Every structure is written in structure tokens, then in C-alpha cells.
Image (tube, rainbow, N blue to C red; front, side):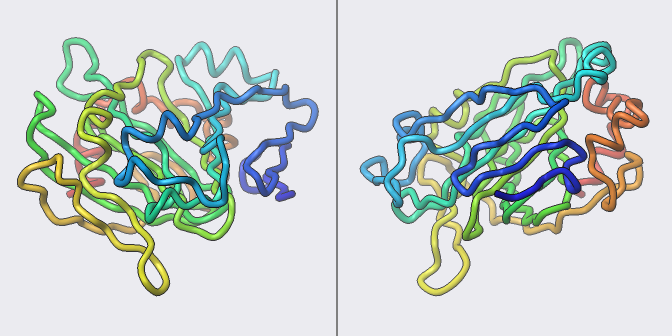
Length: 266
């Protein structure tokens, strides 16, 4: 078991198979489970079998919080989630989330952003932006992050998380609770613009998804914390937000932070 309290700010432990153990006063949260059969439409090889052989590909623990923080979090239309991905190969691909986009905020041009933090393992965040009709691919970026790193998903970017490490990956996220994610744009193209596959030696490679046209090359950028958002690399983002919930205002009102958010991918 991996003790996550210091890095997450919450009393919980992570097992090698991706399950969380919640320690009082943290309330038990039952995860939503992504099954292998649900992954098949977004795999590079739909005939692949998971190795080791598993049925559960990853776990989504939604609305995790200490009881005394419930009112503060709900009042600000936020949600704190944790996602865990065991180290599994899906044919040549590393285990990954299905992928989705966030909707554009009504009467705005920006979609809801999201804030992530790696709690354990090694993550590759693959993000991509398409035009307003979700037809033409504009840019693709890969962000590698380790435990303690924080990553902001900018508005209007689709995204997945890939477990490129040798052990279980755990990530936490703060996100607005005002929307429902859009899975169809990724599902309909059988995945993101690139598949992340095991290299012949160590590491990984990117293979383009033929269901996209005029696919641009991948821009690799480092995980970082932008000082514009008042986040510290040394403090868990749960703890930081509870101390000053205004740091997360950009998650519900990205238009007020359009310039700062644009700099993330400039």
C-alpha cells in the first residue's frame, strides 16, 4: 500500500491494483469502473487483450472530500476526483483513459478547464485542440508528469491520461460540477490523434491515428505550475484550494482568466 496523505492532503492509501482505502474521517467513496469492453472503441488494436489479463482498466472516485469541507466545495460548484490506472498493456498501447472534451460554457467561447495533480506513478497527459465544429485538428501536446506535478487542462482541449510507468498511476483533479463531459468526439475517431505505444527498448513512442487528417506533430511540454493561479508545487492542491477556494475560480469562470490560460499552451 502507498500512503497518499502527505502528497494529497487526504487520509487514504493506494493498493498495487489501483484501489483506494479511505481512512476516517474521510468518507468511503465507491468508484465508477471503466471496463475493458468500454475501451475497445478507442484502442489502436480493437482485438488486443489486456496484459496482465484484467477486466477493470481504471477506477474513478468522484466527489472525494473531508466532511467539514463539503459545504465549501458544493457552494463553489466544484468537485474533487481521483482516478487510478493499474499498469496494464492494451496490446502495444499503455493503459489510458477513454478521453473526452468539455462543453463550451453557454454564451462563452471557452470550455471548462480542469486542474490535475499526480499522486503516484508516472503520467503522460495527451491533450489536443480542434476547431469549433470538432472537425479539424489544430494542435496536439504531450505533458509528462510525476508525483507532485500539477497540470492544467486548458479550455477547448480534449484529453486523456496514459500510465507510462511500471506501477499503478493515481491522479487527482479539481473540476467544475456544472457540466457533463463529451465522449463522442474521441470515441467516433477511435481515440485521440496519437496512440502511445511501447518502444522496442525503454520508454514509449507516438503513432498517429489514421482517423484524423492533417495531423500536426506533437509538442512536448513539461508539467509546471503557473504562478498566475497561485498554486504551489510544494503543497497538495486539495489543501491549497481549501485554504483559499478563490484559487479555483478559473475552473468555473475561464473567460476571466483567458490570457493566463492561453499562456499555458503558447
